[in-house]
Every structure is written in structure tokens, then in C-alpha cells.
Image (tube, rainbow, N blue to C red; front, side, top):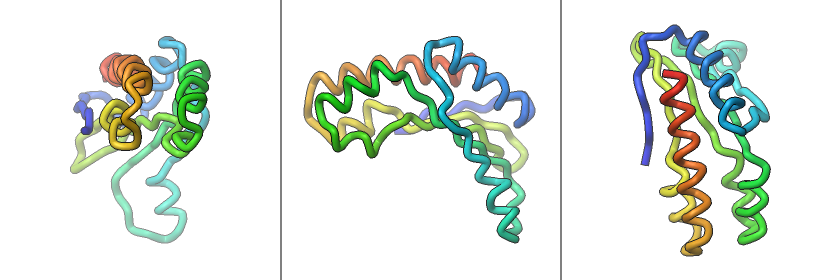
Length: 127
């Protein structure tokens, strides 16, 4: 269900490298949520780092929504760079698993496979 890799890179370097990989593989970064900074800004003692990258390939997203508009709620894809006990990690929830839980449509499974392959490649390149 999850695809998570560890990297020897710093949190910031892994974040920069992920953003580059996303663009190089034909996706765009719609937004980056810095969850760690947000929690700390609310006065919480949260020591870990966590950035969630919302990434999208417009063509693939349009295909998904043409098949089942309700699946807009599962978009865009999210890839996280985070720390856990001092170790930097990069991960995602696999699109095939997620969309298969929401629909039985075989066309959606194929789109999810294509997206999953690309997003896992992004993670591996950023590693």
C-alpha cells in the first residue's frame, strides 16, 4: 500500500531533488504543504519535518475524472518527504491500491499503474 524509501540526503536536499524529478517526469507540483512548520507555528512541539508535495499530470487526471468524477477527491497524487527519528524518507500511497479501493473500473487500474510507475520513479530519483 505504501512505497517509502530512506535516503542519506538531508530533508531539504531530498525535497529539492523530488521537485526536480516531478518536473523531469512530466508532472507538475501544484502545492507543497510544510506540515511540520504548520504544526510548529500553531505552538505544537513537533520535531519531525514533513513536506507533502501535491503532484499532477493533467492528462492522467482528466482521464480519471472522465471515467468517474467522484475520484477528483483522490487527486492530486501526494508524495511526502519526511523525517522519522533522524532518518529522511520519501514516500507515497500507491495509486493502484488507492484507486482499486474506490473503483472496479479496469481503465482506472491501467491509468493508476502508469501514474504509480512514474511516481515511484520520482521517489527513486530523489533518493
